[in-house]
Image (cartoon, rainbow, N blue to C red; front, side, top):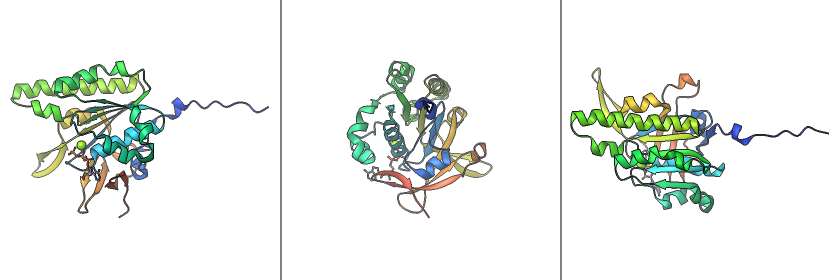
Length: 241
Ligand SMILES: Nc1ncnc2c1ncn2[C@@H]1O[C@H](COP(=O)(O)OP(=O)(O)OP(=O)(O)O)[C@@H](O)[C@H]1O
Ligand SMILES: [Mg+2]
């Protein structure tokens, strides 16, 4: 008689596929569990589309997503366009939280554990720095806000490990000046990059609706450093140039 081989699906779940093969290739299969993935880029480069697409694919492998919509831009219409024929199946798998202030975002992150009994495979915070930016004012305030942002991201990093789930955070960019050159860095770069791996940046190309996704420090993984993406009604897909 043949031995019965039990495959533990939990052990296989070490990434959440993004639904875009070139991005999955860049990331080594998808966004990793037990880690924070950071996606940053200018407005309309596809960060929220990417986050929704990851939530859809998380639902397709049987896990829920807690989606902290700090930008208040999550739309069920966009979700159904991306989930397409799975949209009725996918919608109940998304727990939507809409903080209106940076303090409410902190509460949502501090109370993550209360949701974690419900097979959550992914936590999204889109955009993690938008409510923080609303509060930025004087120098002293900036120091305490940075400390609070650091605390929130540290909580997310801990929750990713404790609950064996993936965390995806998005950030806008700001111009950084160094050695006479200007580059775009995520807002609160040091805090976000300290806790995140992988870090992806999305850039608009000279073609409409085509972005270049660039993986920072690809040498850590020995994978390709960049790929091109088409951002369309149905979500993000490969773009061959
Ligand atoms: N329903 C849709 N059909 C077609 N394209 C869409 C649709 N919704 C959004 N897009 C396009 O997808 C692109 C990316 O939008 P998305 O909201 O994902 O960007 P983003 O990086 O999150 O922007 P922001 O920084 O403003 O939050 C935009 O060019 C937008 O016009
Ligand atoms: Mg967005």
